[in-house]
Length: 391
Picture 1 (cartoon, rainbow, N blue to C red):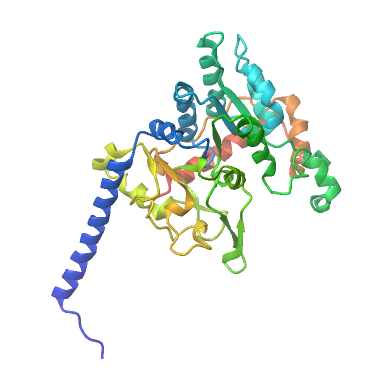
Picture 2 (spheres, one colour; picture 1 turned 180 degrees about the vertical axis):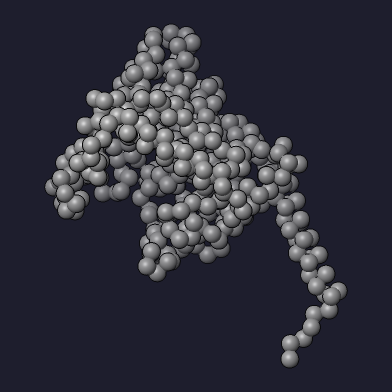
């Protein structure tokens, strides 16, 4: 026979739950207040003990990209003269730095460099980073060191793919991945670019990329879609992992708050950390706590757990401190805006190039307008998605 729980017992249990929640909330807020700094200040502070810092974004979020732009003058003031970026090819580095030191800013060239890296990367905020560097360099004394941007993206040419079978053909893939095929590690080329541009020159750099490339100490778990569980394997050759192998504690990963992938793989996104931060900082009385940046090691923030994410697989008691070394919270996810598409980024003369790089588009009767509309639709869909993200 099931025993009845007295009403008083139920009340005490509910009070205990509320009290524990309030205590953990208070502890988290106190930790943030005591250990955080403004985002730009936090990044600069970390460079005192680090040579290469990876800052990982989600992609397509305006505020995340604007943070990188806002960091440029602060980096320069603190004698950090290099930004590495996933969003241009390494082979266009010289062309980029000519752009950044010319007497007149060449908007057309900036768009061309972005287009050659990724045909759809026609977003105003990413190109604003380049213009910000150009303005900074233009105002510097003639003999002052100039701020540089170098690409970490490999050269690829998918026009060699003529059938689905070609994706499995080593001889064809060697032509497709013409600058990186001979590297043993999956992201060895990007790590090589950082080695050549920064480590060998004993300089410092901020590396701006998607978060998956930016992992240093964290090994990203594989997911088995059939078993709906951990595949048993980790990705240990991300760009950040490889650089950490060389620099050890002189490198780190900072994640900018935004969506994570859910526990069912790498297809759908959810609020990070089971929505704890988004829920907390949606409360008006806590708006003065952010934006902030802070360490995840030895802080209540770093002890936050997450169950509804693919990132937990392969880890016992997965917490934020496993995932990254530093965390920047700009605002709740559903308050973010998407980046701004550049009008007519794809020109009529670009269409054939896009079709050659996208096998699925090869036989389509596409126009430049179609492609520019596609970029806008992607962003509109993503905006709807992040606005609907709630705990």
